[in-house]
Image 1 (tube, one colour):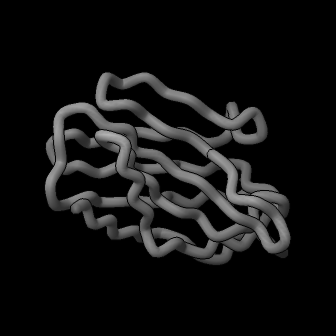
Image 2 (cartoon, helix red, strand yellow):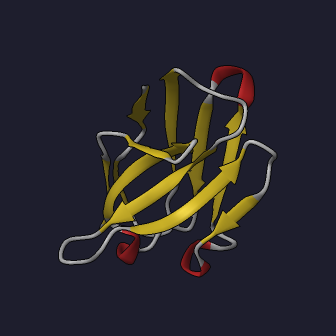
Length: 115
């Protein structure tokens, strides 16, 4: 089992920045993928960004150039630096951890972009 603890959501004005963190603990193997998904009201959950244990990055087109995902492998922590935030980025952001075919989710953190 893997446990995920997220932090860093909140309310920010358009154009502002936020940083999300997610720390994983438990039975962690060397090959895995950590990342972030989000779900806005009335919409399906969608991938925001993920990083493999080998360092490969993947971003949703809607966040490229504005969001940066990174990992601290020693701390089993993934970060999401979100810049130039837009109202359409408003959603609950979920940390995701995938290994050996098992998918784990964080509790979710609300990000609201509004003036």
